Every structure is written in structure tokens, then in C-alpha cells.
Image (cartoon, rainbow, N blue to C red):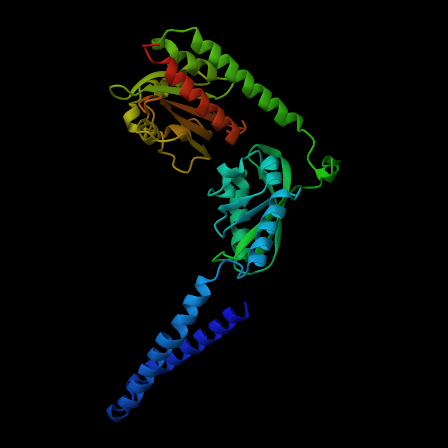
Length: 370
């Protein structure tokens, strides 16, 4: 570390001297040889001194010594095994690391969360404030704490405490986030030496409902001809899982086959719509992945109804899922688009994953070869 600091000081001095040389360009012509000699001296200094030292510093193993590397591994293990939910973020809230407790607490696997913004797992109303506080901490403006809500459990307030860290090997300051139920420590008793939250009744109920939906969908797909599979799947999802369900086939071209809404009149607004005018459907049909949006930012993403109004605005869509029905060979056989509207809870990541599983089963059921 001392060698690195010394190198940094010498480099800073070099930069200051170069700045002085730049101001010397206005000296009289007779004095220019002296300035040129000084510039050549500085270039020699970089080539002979600074560059070799830089190469030696960058060639050292992380941590500088074997003991430091062992300590680094120990700290990583401690991070993973601490009972507190912890996440390491960059200044854009992208998850660099998520420990086991945080994975359990949020219901999101560490491998899935890494590389994605943590704001995507928060309630929509909390995202802007959380993003701003993380950026402030990363800028060095001090530790912060705020209350947020997880998308999967929007009724439970979560206290997020933020502090800046500069781990070895990281090029920029990262932000350590500690998550804990706000005012609910009594619900986190010590079990076998580890603090774990008690099961949440509402979450357990939602999980049971999701498993029941998967069972109903599987039963329905096993009992219908291939030509009716998509329509039957749409009717299983309508009402119990989504307020609106729109189904389109993708072979040979996009064709609307089913439109289900809270009322027949509302369904008629999109039943005759050309799916090729719906950017979300077109994107999914081209092989895109499942799209989950909360408070969709683009009102035109699902095109317009027969009156010319944006469908997402007319339907008061608060969250949506657009799911390609992809066969094992990669062929997209259709697209299912699901809307929730009004005060209904937004689609969660868990529901999106379940819908991704059902989409593969629907695609298989649509194969006329059985």
C-alpha cells in the first residue's frame, strides 16, 4: 500500500509539472529550447521511472502477499455466511454480490440477482429514492438509511442501510447494503445460532396459490388437442392470475386468437387489433425473453385499441408480462401477454419465473405431433 501511495504522489507531481510546461508555450522563441529540454526530461522520467514502477505494481497478486490473499478469501466467506442480509452494489445499484441471507430475505437467487439493478426487486415507488441515495453514498457523501418495500412483499417495510466500501481489486467505490425488516426484529428469532425471519403467512399463501395454478395449467394442457392448447391456457390464467390475457400465434405470421378482459366490451377493444402493431408482442415473437414491467414506461408498448387510445392506458395497466411460447428447437409458436390493472398487486419475480415455466409447457402442448 505504501508503494502505491508513493507512486500516486509521484504521478500527481508529474501531472502538475506537465501543466506548467503547457503554460510555457507562450514564452519568447529564444527561451523555447529550455522548455523543450524540460519536456524531454519529463518524458524520460516517465519512460525510465514511472512506467517500470507501474508494471511492478500491476504485476503483484491481489492483496500483495499470500497471507493477504487468504485474508481476502476469509472476508468473502464471512460476507456469505453472515446472518444479516447483505448486498454489494455499484453506484447504479447493480448487484455485485448478494450473500445467502439476502437471497433468502429477498427470495431472489444470488446468481440471478448479480448483474441486475437491485431497484428491479423493489416496489416501483421506492426505486428513484433508493437509486439517488446509493449514488450519494458512492460519491462519498456519507452513510444513508431509508425504508423501501420489496416487490414480492410490498406490505412489509424494509430498512436499507447504505455505507461506502472500497474492496481490494475493485476499481471504484461500492456500496454495502444491509436489509432488515423495519421495526420487526421480534419476527427474527435466533434459530440454531442464525437470525432468520419467521415464515410470512401472506407470502406462503401466494406461493401455495402459484403452485395450485401450475397444477391446474398442467392438467388443462394434458386434456386438450394441440389446436386448443393456447386458448385453454389463456382461460386458465384469466381472472385468477391476470385481469387481461391476450394470446397470439406466431406461425406463419402473428395472429390474434384470444382476448380476455374484465368485460366483453373491453376484450373487444383488442380482439381485432393487429398484433404486428404491438411492439411487445413483436419483440417476444422474435425470440425475446419474458418481459416483466411495473408501471410500463411506454404507453404505446402494446399498440392502440380500435378507438386509437393506447391499450395500456385504456386498460389502466399497472404491471404486465409478455411471454414468448418457445419450443425446444427454439421456434416461437406464440406470445401470451398478461395485464394486471387497478389496485391489484404487480407481478412478482416469482410469478414471472412460474409463467416462464408454464410458457414452455404451453409451447409443447401446441405441437400437433404430440
